[in-house]
Image 1 (cartoon, one colour):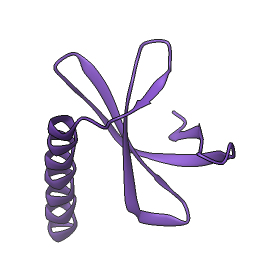
Image 2 (cartoon, rainbow, N blue to C red; image 1 turned 120 degrees about the vertical axis):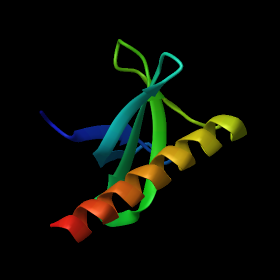
Image 3 (cartoon, rainbow, N blue to C red; image 1 turned 90 degrees about the vertical axis):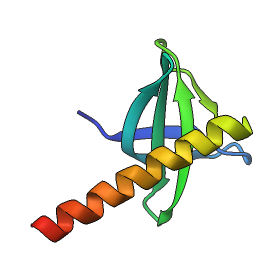
Image 4 (tube, rainbow, N blue to C red; image 1 turned 90 degrees about the horizontal axis):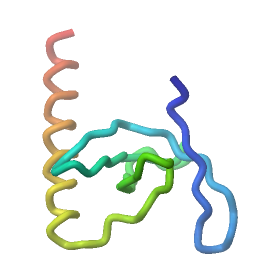
Length: 83
């Protein structure tokens, strides 16, 4: 499985993004991604079955995504401690 997607940024440049993880909520599919140059800055998108991606900009939806990212981070920390 290829864990990369390419996004056109505001300046029209193609940017390679790494997929950190994907998840579904209320029949909507999401992906959380980051650039190689800045792994600390995450971006969230939702996508459809045709592969189109859309920015998550609804405040309630962003809050839900942030909660999922926090839970993911906590699990990653636990996994590292157990290793």
